Length: 325
Picture 1 (cartoon, rainbow, N blue to C red):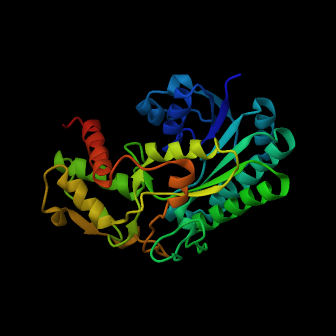
Picture 2 (cartoon, rainbow, N blue to C red):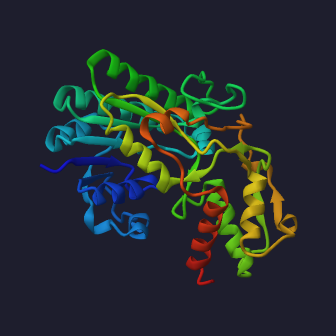
Picture 3 (spheres, rainbow, N blue to C red):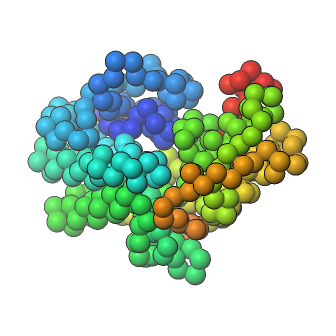
């Protein structure tokens, strides 16, 4: 029998790239969706897999629906990518962030425990869990957590719950501690896509300025298409484990802005950028940089797309959306 995978967050950024990878490997892919009157399939359309995914309805905050879904599908693998993942919004929407990001994981783990104990479970963890902590400027699997947002706190709960169910009940659970990963289908509320969309609009004469917050924040940015390969590889190992996934390089938001403008031939980018205090977080995380040695050693995984290639890829896609070249 072919393997089956249930992917939550199928309409987001990572879900479509992961679905494409799994379909290419012969999986039957189920995509979990809440009931929408008009679902947005644009991200799945972008990678060309909309018609190949089987959509199933459920809600991360509804324990009964998750239990019934796992009991019915008996999936070989579950990839839990669903989350309220916009960090700034988590300060204003702490309750819903907690319900989806924390309790949703509890519902899935209990469903697997009681109804499908051989199912392998991938939990999308995040570098935001580290917050201010680092080890000689890097974060790896041994770096302590110090989250600086309700989003980060909710993900720490989910991380340790996944570890606990692995240690307590022998479930095959893996945490992928992914650092910032972007793509042309990243939501516009995220700073990277906000930048590339803004640069495209400025280049085409559709906008005159780009309003941003903290340009000094440093992040380890990679391509989402590379990172879903790491998710898949984690669940193919003989033993479950937790892995930091990133490039090992960091760049400031300013670097990202400069690279985006450079890709369209604009060197005097500063005259287009306006610093707006409303986009700054109540508690900032100044720098995040991965040390993915374990992933390289155990999973034989590494990034393929460079920082500059990623930025150019995103800007080109946004130019194309507006009819530019």
